[in-house]
View 1: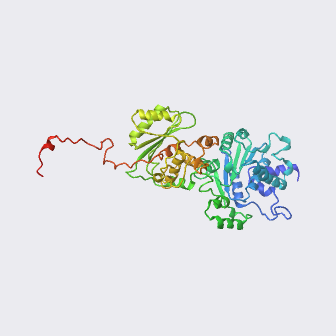
View 2 (view 1 turned 180 degrees about the horizontal axis):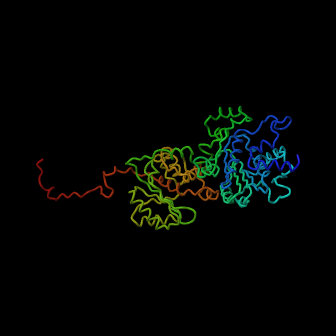
View 3 (view 1 turned 45 degrees about the vertical axis):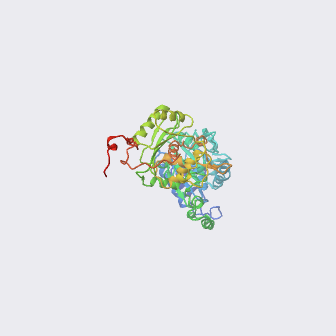
Length: 500
């Protein structure tokens, strides 16, 4: 077929990736590598059709996220989309990345090489070890393979291509750092441009931008989601899946991730269970009149972090609203704590006394209020019986408070808040040399692009120490002393004889 004829055919598929895939490869042809394959799988067709439908609304970026089990053919789909994208619109630009450079080279790019070899118009585009491009316009009409790096996110900041087409594909996106997602998101802002952003991966983690693109996540409204069960794909090894299910159980996290394409209930070394979090967000908020009101205060002076006042009454950490401040001085924050204490008639105030928090503690005590000065790095107090986390050993007070919160979460109620959910799932842990639980530091979390756990720190502070139950409302006013008067033996009524 002549180049002119190929170009004319390719033009027919500018907005039709499904039609392109059916036309571009020798499906079912005798003697070809595709002799036994009549065409794409149904889940692949669905995504190709959704890209087509999205192209009809060029004012909005196409964002598709796919979580799948093993061996479903996602690398093949990635290759088809790359070839369709670069072949059917001139001066297309794109970037393909993956969780590791090895994955990118040995799987993603290797699969592209296979389909490029089968592509009917392969002579129009040159494929190298790191790019595919038009030989005549190498600088402006190309798609590059770029390994991601947290230290160099700028490689994903130059994806502007006004009036043309931009393609960004993240393969095994579950473990790509959030900073790469954020950098790419800021770059894909050109108007009147076909912007196609696809994410693929096994759902191995309950935190990060890939998970946040799915149901319950902060970014779910902006993405169309797909979950592919490996057993529904024609060419997968069903007997292997049956062995896994027999060995691990139908509803185990191993099977959920590797077969069903579902996110785990609790990711590897994640401190909180996603199932417990979602249950606590859906559970009815209840408390007893005897439950004490605890106030946790996480202190941050300036910058990206917030100061948070979080009240909790027994099993209810939802009804009493938390208060969030940014850039508040220590004396003004102490005033807000005093106001909250007065409003709620709280039974205990727990303040993160580290760093600038010491100033808040001093100002609260200056107002004749008692508060607990909690040092996250101090020794644990071993109140496991009172907090419900018996049998667990913690390296410091921070880990112990988080452990008490985790035990409470199984029956407690928290707000259905995507930011709070992300903070809970971002907490990871390990063990020290004494086999004690130690949490990943807040500083490391922030460097990894995870959300700052300001709200969560304020909540867990309410578990720093157990508080005594409060008397029933109305039974004994808080400002009424337990002793009403002193006994006077010389009072008239006590001096008169009694004839009883």
